[in-house]
Every structure is written in structure tokens, then in C-alpha cells.
Image 1: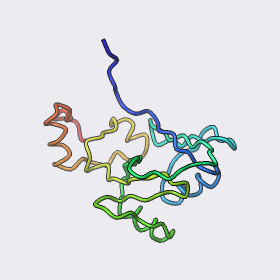
Image 2: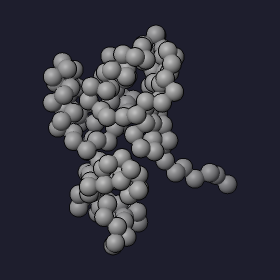
Image 3: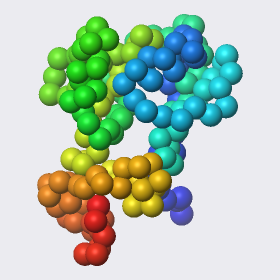
Image 4: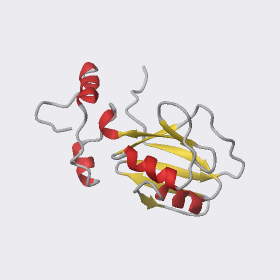
Amino acid sequence: MKANAIGINHVALEVGNIDEALKFYGNFLNFEVHEKNEMQAFIYFGDQFINFTKNDNRQPDQKRHIGIAVDNKELVRQTLEQMGIKLLKGPFLDFLDPWGNRVEITTYINIQYTKADHVLQGMGLGHLKKTEQALAELNARGLGPKKNENS
């Protein structure tokens, strides 16, 4: 017997400075900060979070990365460019944060990952609707919303 994987609750990212990490990510993402101290901070987006953990000896990622779903990918692209962040070559919106964590930004409506309607509502994002392609991918796996659901 095995346990069933249900989802990812959080990801821990190593950073050199907690306050600087909160400022950097806060320049292009809205989130709530919980339990911050000089060694770690937890930033929540609805029912998931990132744990920033202080590590002064962080090595840059090459292939390993975290994907963050947003409501407006182009706004993130523009903001990162204004911040002087170098975007990585390739088909995705990838970049390295100041500590070498590779981050991929994706658009929530275009991917299979789905937040429950009540969580989206609580986040003030109840207006987001999945694209037909994302819904088709979900439906092909038997994971699509019921006919009376909107996401």
C-alpha cells in the first residue's frame, strides 16, 4: 500500500536574506506574510505557501525550478524587465532570483492546476476562468469541473 499524493502544500526556497527576498518577490507578486523572522518567512497565496529559508551558501539552479501560477503573466514580465531582471532563454517566462532560485511564471487559466472555487473567491480571484485547452486537458484526465462549476 502507498499513500496518495494529493498536491503540493508548499515549497522551500533558500535565500541569502529574508527581508530582501520579501522585497524582491513583493515587487511582482501579491501575497500574505506569516511567521517572519531573520531565518525564515512564509508567504501565502490562498491555501499554498512558499517558505523562504536563510542560506548564505546557495548555489544557482540550472534545471530545478519552481513554477508560480499568476493571473497576469505579462504584467509579471513587464515588472521583471523594469526591475532589470534577466529573463532566461527558452519558451517560458523563467528567471533566476538574486539567490539563484530558478522561477517559472505561468498563467493560471492556461494550466491544469486548479484552486477550489471557494479558495479563489477568498483570494478575490473568483473571476478567473480556465481556457478551453486547460479544461480539455483536465477533462481528458477525468478531473474537469462539473457542468455547473465555473472554473
